[in-house]
Amino acid sequence: MQILQKLKDNTQRKHKREASLATVTYETVHYLQNTECKNQSEECIQQFLEAMKSFKLTKSEKLMMVNTPPRTELEIQLIVQESEERLSEDDVAKIISIVNKILPVNS
Image (tube, rainbow, N blue to C red; front, top):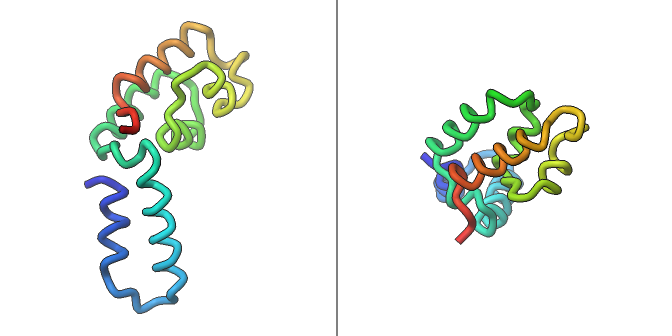
């Protein structure tokens, strides 16, 4: 099940906790509907993370790539700390290719 769908389902339930939880969930759903996350399934995220195992990326860097898929070299430099030292030009090209193949573009 898609993460965005799970959040939508949560907003439809009555929360016994503070109203702030409903507000945060609503705002998150509203934000994610305008990002590439709305097109991502659990399967494509798993496939992407599996493909990223060959690169020495941190969990945070992979999460940022799922949330905001890098489609250019500059975007990878902004996500990956010390990318020039850690990734070759070939690695960067491979990551962009994987992103474009696995993570759907916002439509």
